[in-house]
Image (tube, rainbow, N blue to C red):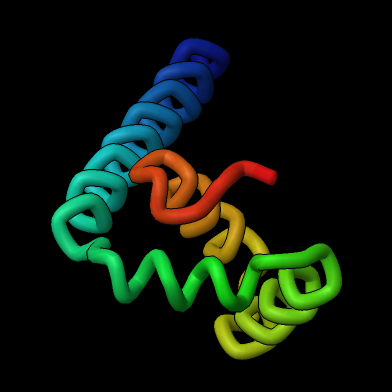
Length: 83
């Protein structure tokens, strides 16, 4: 019985995470404009500036998971390229 409860909690957490990621993508799609794409392009134009800006944002937010989620959402709304 304890195994089913743990499985249910894991699945519920995953569903909640995917729902939040979907909502974040929707809101970023509304907010992203040409100016935001230009700024993101400037900071991620080459490998060095991309790594440096990712490092700085990770240090400021103190969470690599938050940076990864934001990067996924920005790529999803095509404000940033995957590469």
